[in-house]
Image 1 (cartoon, helix red, strand yellow):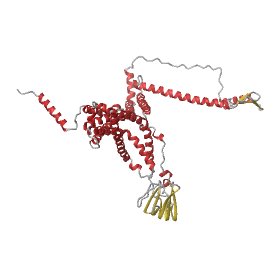
Image 2 (cartoon, one colour; image 1 turned 90 degrees about the horizontal axis):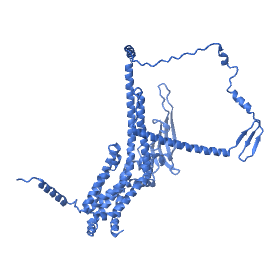
Image 3 (cartoon, one colour; image 1 turned 60 degrees about the horizontal axis):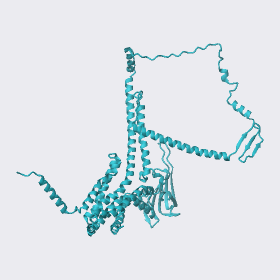
Length: 595
């Protein structure tokens, strides 16, 4: 590496690391503010919050990288231009593209690293982020009873204290007990004073009440004539209530398998599997629509059928083949397991050899042991046959009439009518029409047809809604797939915009570069959100919608590089004054001269 490359790359790495940390912190603050009310104030340890913040930092890094590259490259070449170092480089015969090469190589490597991070690291971190964030949301707030306010953080209890004395002392305590599914304020406890102290490693909380009363009323049954319910009033000098805080105020971690269907935690290969599964569901719904429509109109489909489209049939055949292959593979695996188990049983179990006289026990070592117990196989067989034999004194046999063997049985002839080839006469047609008219079959047929049509329409609407949901999920999976590439390419596009723009502005520091960087990043973010929204709603193809921001910003990068090579002064008034004069001069030259 030459000294020039070291100089330019060294002047870039410092601002890049600084801007990346600053941008990451800003995006972290924005994301944390969304969940501020849900994650803070629950008495969690410092390391839980640090773990969540670490997950957030890694998750938002792909979004912070393009802005960091844009700002740092603009600052680097702005500083070189401001201190006339860029002018010295050009005067020595080195072109601008050659000066951009070291940072360009670094940004290409950074883009590849960003792709690997998006595909492998970020999905795993998102899985842990979702699980930890959900557990924090589900955790109850920390035990913090305030004076004059009802506290319902402990399940089944509502506690009000009028005054707090010191750390654990309480005065004028009112407790409503709603445990065991009690509805209404049927169990009320009043006390003059008390103490609430944690014990056993803060897993339990003991509430000691002094000089109070307890009012307990049974639930009023429904009806008018029932007897009055039982009412109890108890006076106590000291009463202790123990609360179990293990399941209420401790953080319970959810298994990571609960988030296995979220597309944000999948890499490209897993997203492709999800796309294939969703495509199968969509094709099955479309295929069922044809079958249901054919079943609703039996008269129409008596001699014809609703044939699905060729692509639906091809996908159905492919899915059936894959499903059959999986079934055979699973069956072969199960059969092999059973075969191994049966072989093991044969090797370890004993074999019984039956003989008419004795039973001989044969073991694996070849030694036979005779058991002196006669076995009458013929008796057992006879007994088994007798189970299926009818008794001689069966009542059915006596009740059957005696058959006359001399009687002659004449078989009944089957009448077969030949098909009619002639048309119906007017009289026959009138008789059929009269039957339809008299029995009001026309209205019944119309009503049946309307009901079938409405049922078919409702089924189609339900299936259409299901297909729309599946297709929306399909597009979202595609967007998640393409985002892993676009977020990496955005780093290189931002470098193409920032580096030549800094060479044109020729101002470093945190003034003009920060302003221009924020403007371009906002434009990039708005275009990205717009394209992804179009893709989610099916307005444009997901590939085009995801790459829409790259397509829009890439011409700006090419334009700025072209202007930087010509040392154009885009941000100086003289440039636009000269351009306006050139335009007006051409307009005058195009006007016809007066004779």
